[in-house]
Image (cartoon, rainbow, N blue to C red):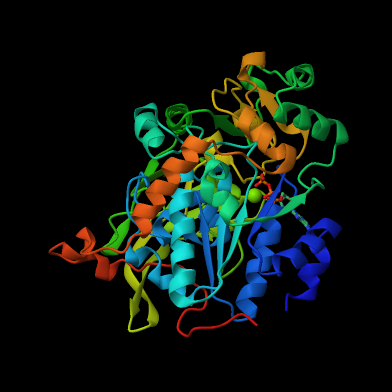
Length: 473
Ligand SMILES: Nc1ncnc2c1ncn2[C@@H]1O[C@H](COP(=O)(O)OP(=O)(O)OP(=O)(O)O)[C@@H](O)[C@H]1O
Ligand SMILES: [Mg+2]
């Protein structure tokens, strides 16, 4: 059972939602930014772990995966990029024999072709191993959408995938028969006027612009030291970080990562981290040993040292932070037993410069103060940025918000009317034809005929309980 102290902290709707999560149905947990979706799912994962349940914790992005202590869904299911047009690899679902619950965080950023691939993996495993796997997806489609490049439009059309990329536009969405949990009580913000205007922004109601534009402050001198710049692009964020670091008049320290083993992909931080005394940083993981810092916490470098740095945390506490050793795992299935193996290690300072991050990377986070260039170009982008804040007092807009920066996808609006989306007949046929091909018994798969037989080593997963097959009680 979940520990009571934590359970008491849930608000009423979260408590109700927790009971529905336990129902073993497939669930779509949704609600506006800051209603406590991630907080709740973290608690649920704790509970599953305690009850010896095999839970596969994944997210559509690396950052969201880190927040939950999981891995990306692409890595977990070995999903090809792009996912369309690929048959399901045996190694993408055999490991599910030992999985009872699959969790996918930040579903709005998960593309329909990847979503279909993952659902088909679950269906194939359920059939093969004659078991039920609970799929829980979490997210808010009013926030940022998946990336669909224009160069992929033709292929997406060929396979019957909607060009919006939203997971709910795939035929698998219906077949998974999700029960909906929608949380309504916003916890991140408490100011009703702020919440009301965020709700208007969500649906691109222009009457909110005046409210937010009261916070325009073009004069950099007024920006608080501890505010994070939220940028629409990586280029803009990197440029600000570099400019800020260069402007600090102190010696620079270069921290080079030490790597062991075979860890070419999925490294948790940059191989070269440059810091200076006075630099603003963000922590990338939790300090499980001393609880001094946690993922997403901000701090300031006080003194760079050879073996680490003294950092002042947001709360004003001075802590010594040393390079962190991340174990890089793979999970291999041999004769019905799943074994977790370390394939290598990555040692680096667990921090990154925090003057600026992209709005994309900010999704899921909570900030006290932000400096925001409001020139958003994607659906939900401005909404994500502004909804990171706890209070409107923490907002510094570099310029006025224009009506054209407000963008809400019509398909999302329609979907939330009654939590359903009608896939066109033509798209349904194309997707079904494609699925038939995927599920058709293979005579001799390409995968097996590869000379290096890579498929043997591909059963990767992230399980909290993995050695023995545990049925949920
Ligand atoms: N029951 C609770 N008690 C105390 N704090 C809570 C509770 N639920 C959520 N919070 C806090 O409220 C804030 C928002 O919660 P959380 O990040 O889980 O929301 P979310 O719905 O996942 O938002 P987003 O859609 O932006 O990811 C966080 O700071 C979180 O720690
Ligand atoms: Mg969240």
